[in-house]
Length: 390
Figure 1 (cartoon, helix red, strand yellow):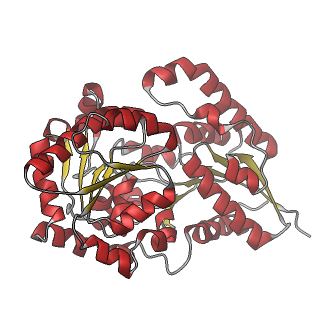
Figure 2: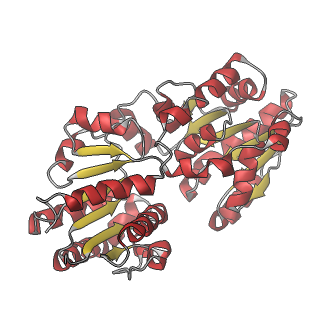
Figure 3: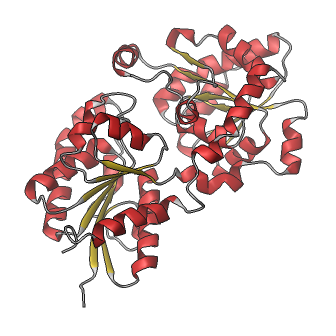
């Protein structure tokens, strides 16, 4: 009788915790009592049975200055995590996103015990910047579980580890993103709902909220009336309210995920900061205009290291720059209000986006199986390999 498989998982952010919990649930479904799961995670992974080595909230640090102040603690946590993996001697280690932390752990584990296979769930953005990371990863990661369909080809071209597309978590939420008949009718009924998405970090709120307000004011001056809805997170509500109080056009501010999804289902268009939300909007079939305005140093670095033709995730997945994007000094009320009129009205630009979004189901297809099921397939295949399973 073989001993239970032992799998160690590490996630340090809520999004990774969600992925880890879904994978744990699927592994327990497949193996029953013949699997031991341990690791580092948040509330969802703990609900699936792990006792986290330390609270992942310790690692919720944003900004260069904050990281510098907390560096001794971060280095200690990295060493603690790697030592825990080596002591546990699992049959496989699954690191989930958060590469600044998890990849440092993986390198230490590989050096201390090269016999432990390592799977990386969510590829770093090697296709956007620092492409040399892919080849470096091949030295300490055995397999990458990609959530974007173009990533396996990128890893092959860049000399990275073996990589399998397993599907993006958003594809499991299509029923909450897409409108029913009544909501589809609301999209065509004036005044149009315009969803505003200035970002989910305080720095993004600070950089983006003024130009959002200026753009709404410009639309009104141009005779365009919209019903503005601004989804945000509860911990950002005070900052968003304070900034929106200066606007001449006041949005309806909502804070729950259900309210955000309802806004997506009813929206005629969106005005969004670049990021994963652009793919969420595209899957919901909402035409959009995007922007990103950062600090001067951040912008200087980005101009020199980013190697893709678009920073909009939906454009990259579609393979065509159908969504307009404005960066830094381009983020003016005149530019943005003009672009928004093109997606609020029945124009060729709006039609082009809608037609491109219709391709996403085919591009992101996973054969009717969930990302967690496909992720478990890869993990189990590695466990069952005679060269790996001990």
